Image (cartoon, rainbow, N blue to C red):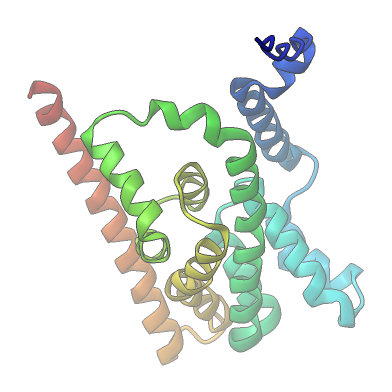
Length: 235
C-alpha cells in the first residue's frame, strides 16, 4: 500500500498575511487615501485651468492633460471641474476627445486596483437577494450594466469604478462602456466651458440646460433614496 503524499509545508505567517484578502483591501484603502491626500500638494483643476499651457510646450500639452486628468480622477477630483478645464484649454472638439480619453484612462487603474486588491475581501459580503441579483446582472451583462451606470448622472464616478471592479464585469467591456457612457455628461461641461465667453450662444444655453437637468435628476434620486430608506427599515 502506497503511503499518502506528504502535505505541502505550511507557509510562514508573514506570507499568509501578505496574501490575505483583507490585507490587500487595507492596501487599497492606503493607496486611495494617499491619492486623495496628494491634493494637499497639487491641484489638478488649477493646473489644468492655466498652469499647463504656461509650463508645458504646445506639442506635449495634450499628453500632459491626459496624465493630469487620469491622476485627478484617481485622486477623487470632481470630473465636472476636469471637463470644464478641457473645454477652456482645448475647445469643444479636442476638449471632448481628451476629456473622454482622460476619463477612460483614469477608470482603468481604479478598476485594476479594485479588482486586484479589494474584490476578494468584499465579494463574500454580497449577501441578500438584491445584492446577489445585482452582482449577477453585472457579471452576465457587463457592458450594458456599466453603460447604464455611466449614463446615470447622480452616481459618483469612482463609486461606479469600484462597483464594477468588485463585480464580475470584464475589463474590456468596462472600459468600452465607460468611454461611451460618459460622453453625454462630459460633452455638457466641455461645451459650457468652451462657450462661456459667449453666454448668449446656443451652445452655452443648451449645455447649461443639460447640466441643470443632470443636477435636478441627481437631487431627485437622492430625495427618492432618502424617502425609501425609512420604509425599508420599517419593513
